Image (cartoon, rainbow, N blue to C red; front, side):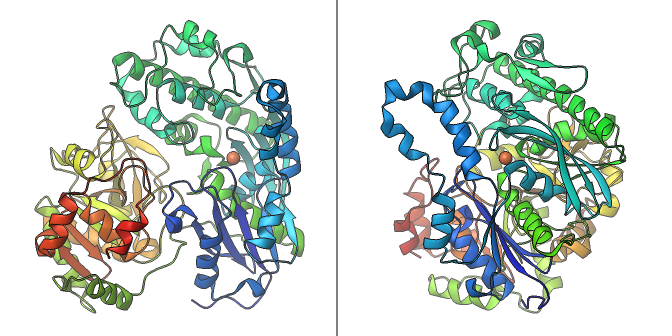
Length: 594
Ligand SMILES: [Fe+2]
């Protein structure tokens, strides 16, 4: 890819908490963005994103010597201030050595020593990075901005205003009062991993009734003007074993659930209750945003903006005409925002005035590489459709219509937690047992978790109560389809929809079209191409390993189709005797086999 020659080259970095990422912006245009985990194969890798930077620069046709500035997504000194405030009361018990893990110089040091960059480093505050990651990519000329997460430096919620090139934060709620930490505390109480299991709580909620909602409301006081505070007697944010105090279990009347233990109705009810209270609170925050900024538009970011059910309520019931959430609304997206703010500071200009239309911001693997790697890996039992896309799509649509589960790798990799047709597992959404089969033997995850549909954009309204595009799978809506779609319809008849256009998705759009022509169904089940606990696949080797270690029926790597039956016998035997290790990255040992 050839980078534009005009304007500064700015790298945005988010790192050192979880899910680190990198973005490259040239002349105010976002050229590439990627998560470090996809390259290191460590789920939510928090390290300085060395591999992602290398990848993004290569994608932009640049080297580190071309970079004018690296922007870091939070202020390490301010963060240290908050960390010390939180940790100091424990020092008499834990000893002063506990303080050594706090290192405000680490980002700058690693940018110099690990990334090899000795130019200027721009520090952008955490919630300003979040706000910029939404506003500067929204295409709005003016907008209210709402950021909500667990915690940045001190802020946990901010309200802001974007006007042209200017973006200002107007007000905030500070730690320890945090809607994100409230949700995470209940996530931990429900036996799911904090910072990872929040979307499981959201998926569990429709199975319950909000009978704990009044008790959850005891935990948070939302004022009439739309700010909030937590009752801190119910929390212990210094406790790594769980962020709720002993009083929390007493109030809820429900002990903490042990991880991996059976999920009971009470757990579903608590999930529904925290979801309900979160939606109510977010709506109050959105109304406050409108009072502070009289715009028809709202931009949202921060981890809580990934709560798609709550976002839908703001779209439907909130005071705004248009709501924009970008696909990496969590901390990874802070890299985009930091780069955008640095561009504004360096040039005085708005980085981009166009709305972000695609999340396909990572690299692509050249088809020639795929063929070479397949042969090097010892299989020649693949079908080659080079320069024959219609035949390829017909072959894949035929397999999907026959009930097969497809691993699909095409074009640039997605940025953000959702697979959107670049690295996806696809299936017929009409199959009665498809959801259970994929949950049990492909994704190896909890049976209650729903799958999402990808639908041709122009046909979406026939099947979903949705009157606008949803390209990033960031909204839920009601399924109103005349078709029976059990694999993608949640228990409350909702679905988290991705609308697909030919302009943004090319071959993926044409695949759904081929499936529609064969079946009359313009929808595919679309879930991320990974096993439970592992990052989404990146290379052909990652895809092959995921294929071999799961029950996916067929792998499509760019122009090549590999049916399970065509695999070499030795591979099948070896992998049938090798159980995937739950929750861990794919080991290097396994990679050496390929
Ligand atoms: Fe954040």
